[in-house]
Length: 290
Image (tube, rainbow, N blue to C red; front, side):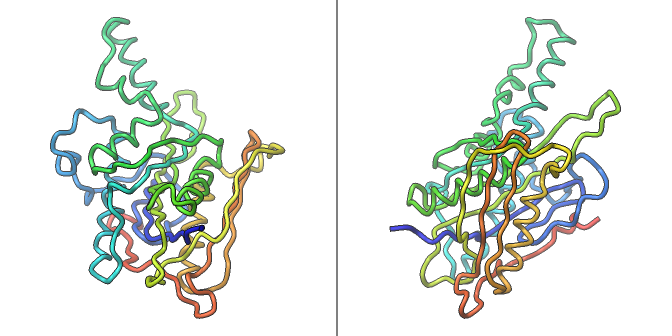
């Protein structure tokens, strides 16, 4: 038996700001994530935290905001999935590059015998996800996905397959790209974190859009010159979720990378015949649209 997969909540952080359950504004300026004064300090999220890397702090803050928004919906008759049942599956092309370079910079400044242990533990692409699990108490499986520029949408497609097959009750998925500023004058793509909560759709709850179909694979490479960089597919997924909650048919998204990876998926309202499907609690963070 295949479970129906609902997209119940989403969160996006870009150089333009933070959006919870709403469509982010296009990134037209800036490269680093926008300041987010309303985000909880990491010590308030996890009082026994170590000295997390800035990359890990950012994704923990966004995950906390998303799961808090989802929990708030439980009072409207939609019970949130248990954290013990929740998997983590995040796509990234840049991986732990920022932490890697920070660690190497420390070696250059202090000598090869004096690398920072607190930075070294974040030189794996799974480290930010592990920080989410520790800070928020998630107890499901954890993995990162690398598929070039479509790493994020590939992770969403794979997460949908896991939930549909009953391998997990819910999965926090999406994409994250953070790169250091270049010294050569080369323009880096904008940083972003995009998170989506997929969960088994309850028959009595028709409030959320559904992942209708999904597929991933490897084939002919797409020339880099015509590939959008970074968050384009995930931003489009936010737009499709907004359209699906208005009950406007089936919405499709696909992408491919210069390396030959490809992914596609589609969304539809929970009940297409009745046009039901939405993301309740939609808000822009006060620091968002800037």
